Image (cartoon, chains in turn orange, blue):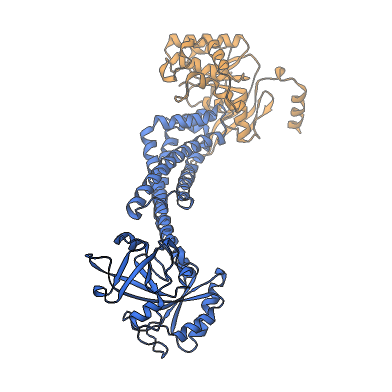
Length: 239
Length: 395
């Protein structure tokens, strides 16, 4: 009944007014032969539209589990997660995949571009998944220009450009479907400090333009670019 | 679609590995198709040789018969033969179909002054029966006792033409015959094998070889559906108490021969099929390698929104490309191989470019594509069902 009331509310509230992400009493337990391991215990937080949040915590604190749940790559053992008002707990794999494609943009530490595709194709890949047809490469070019990548590099393969440039391509790819949230996993972890700073400047600019960003990092210097920090330890939030 | 493009590029980037997998399919297709083509060409070749006699019932004396109706033949070739009385009985049993008595022997003959003596088969037929049994490619049927017909191979080998004269017997002691016509090539037959023989009138044959009995009787059956009943009628009439004649339904015999050839073709093609299965295992192996190498890529695709079926399609496309390209190359090579085998073994390629031979290429190619796809299913399924989190962590 509680859930039903919440769903009714969801209908009456416009999407722009809703929190982009809500975690309600989220617990994640991994059953192992040697005994259950509780990775997250009673996580509650809300991410409003336009926020720039960093998630920090020591190794083994549950950061990765939290990131997987935020990115709809995993489902909680108990509790609820809402992405733009949509409850993810009961979703099928197909629905979760659709949610990742349409509402979430991923940025990884190791860029994770497709080596067989050129830069334009890498950027437009999520668009093709969404539209199920060939897309106008001009849209890819516009997205790459928005992350300040030189036009000359557009037809190169990822291996032919620098790490910083690869991460800019990855950011353009993450933004191409106009997602509600940008999820970043150590976005500068594989870059030198100068290039990393450039990437963080770009992310700040994107946030200024309204992009909601959640960034997992262990680097306090990088976390400084965010406007709010969630600290996690032993599977609990210590905000 | 982008997944098709990725599949193509992955094959291209691992060209050597992909080529080796395709080679297996090529060999499999060639094995199946060329064996099928060879088998079918053999069937067609034999069929061509036998097709002129598919409408006959052949009656021959039963070997080992001791019936009084069968006596020693004057020609010396056969110890038993069919008497005039037996022939009349066969004729009545097979009516209204035409029963043709056949006399056969062989003798020496000379084809011109100064030429060497040769030995060839001589058939004796009643003049009215000849057009029923034999078609001419040149000249006309001989009516008088001094004329004869010659087989096409006989004519070619000995440069015999219409109007040529043939002296029969040692030094022509049995008389000279004038060639009035050349018989169309008949190939190997159950009734009379005239290609390398000469055909004379029954009266001349009787007169020269002092024969009154026949070596066989050929019943030409007008309605092919009547073949079994004509055969039964003759058997019932002639073999009431003891088996004195053997009755052969040529169509049934041909069917048995073709069935045997068909089974041989199937068996040999099945051996080819085993090589295709081996090729399939190679595709499976390569696809599994491809999946293992690209686990991280699969994880990225899944995390940014690729559905399971899309990941699966990417690997199936890869298997399909390997199968289709391998099968196309295999198909082309089968055609060349079939051409070479036909030319070498059958000395003709006319049986290659017919639907029943070419269909074996289609079978081989279809089998190659299907095997590739089947062997791609498990790796594709495995890729599609990888846990995106584990796949992303994979190094």
